[in-house]
Image 1 (tube, rainbow, N blue to C red):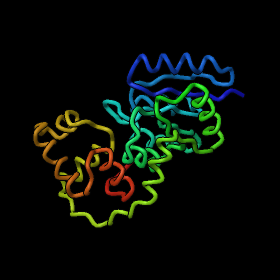
Image 2 (cartoon, rainbow, N blue to C red):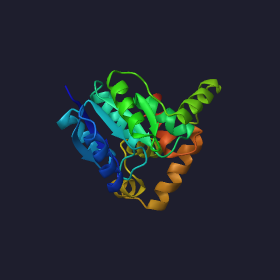
Image 3 (cartoon, one colour):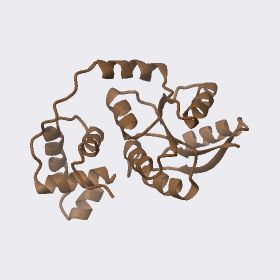
Image 4 (cartoon, helix red, strand yellow):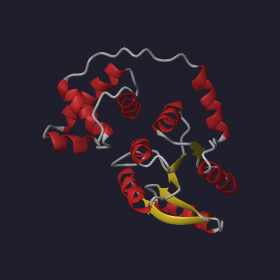
Length: 213
């Protein structure tokens, strides 16, 4: 049976390149393409692919948030984070959200094909640079779990961040200015002791700080 693959990337050219790559291997079947995390979640529910190639940095909803949603709803789907970036925060976020494998986009066609086959079987595959970063992560001391309490409004905004909304969408939803949203998010990052919103979302999910449907 063919391995059914879903491609998720907000760049048309990259999706086209991955489509051509999949066609070169008869054991793979492209079942769909998504340009955002939100669209990926919807397509996974409808198409039930075996493996998802997930970009991490996308507008509307980032890949880590999408991985979290898909993994919770459909744990049988294997997820490969396929990113241009190998920062430790991104790697940790993707794997903790439910990704099985993490590859950089400079991976060769054969390496990507091997990774899809292995990931489909539940085996982890990492680019060498990612494996090196993982070793550093494992050697780092764990962050203390203590955080400064968030205000009710900050919890509300954090919940919308976890849902994948960007600053403009949050401002619209809460009927407040984008500047106010930015200030709240800055406070949230400081209280959680993280550097960016991806880390904040990961911490919120890990510690169950917000309600997730």
